Length: 371
Ligand code: MRU
Image (cartoon, rainbow, N blue to C red):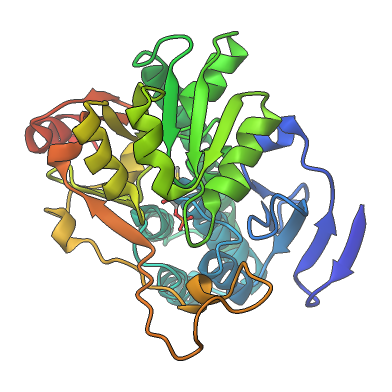
């Protein structure tokens, strides 16, 4: 293991990410339970690097620059952040701890706006803290530790259930096209959209995956093809603009994509380009599914029009992956990180509570009534 200090608090170490490590997600509590450890997803697939996070700025920065990314993984990281930050405050009284936690929570939530799992996890940690406001600070910190671990454990269970439901929708040998990355790196285990393929592989069922490279940050090329390749799954990487041809050739029997926020009417935000894949799938008569846990469903968000879409730095398009800039410095860019897929294009939403078919407004209410 090779350590190099970036800051005093943020340790970075290089270590091979084994297949087993990878299948268990990208976010963990450190062994001494005083820090959160993430696989730095910005460095994959070329460098397998872990980051140790303890300070609010480290967590904010890791989420903002996508070192930790994928809606569920961001939620798990935020939950551990709320615990780790509370632990390191060594607060003298609970009232001041609670007020500091609220500030940390607002700061973390401001790092990325679209994935609801981030604010969902922060709010759940704050609600737990407020419920236990009569405890002394040390007891409260220990309650927060348990809650963060519960969020992580629940995500593992949710991914397993989603993977089972997803697997029931495809047949051995099917071609499955996916966009962006919704595998174990983006979650805790198996992933959501990639989960059925990994679970199938464990059971000896083979599929043919097609991974859109996913411009501009290349999550499909750098992360999905890396995960599937490591798991020994037949994966073909394509540029985003090749999806139509691959579908026309009859190679795709289903599209599985993740989601960052599902509105109450079934519209959902996912990585930019997802809505185009859905439109193509409809054209070719291919079923199109989004797979996500109930923590990604936002019943307070009526439709996709109410989802805030993150816009990112134009340099991600113009120069980030190139040796030389690929566009004039002064050219205008539009770089939305997500788009909204209309619910009319969706065959079904695969959740941890089952497969939800239209009418989504009515059927989402049923699975969310106890949430
Ligand atoms: O910008 P990213 O890489 O965080 O976008 C991620 C996605 O769009 C995923 O599909 C989504 O978060 C689901 S991950 C299970």
